[in-house]
Image (cartoon, rainbow, N blue to C red; front, side, top):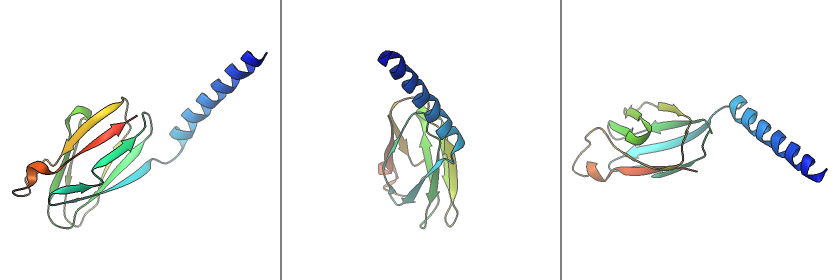
Length: 115
């Protein structure tokens, strides 16, 4: 009987978790882009959790590219750039600036870590 209750409780928890994420608004993660860094430079996410990456820059145009996840965005000065995303796999995914922004451009990198 205890086993049956445990299985039922686990099934309800799993069902509730699935509906809780699908019914709730995506979590917004604010990211600042400036010469030659992103803040934060590491973004921690969970598989299946919908998020919106919200970018701002005050200095000049930048880019955001995560090749392994197929994410690409252009971040324009004075505008907010939103990238909706729901991770489907775990891992560490490197991102970089995809718009040349000066002599330190190649060091403008970070990572999305999906657990």
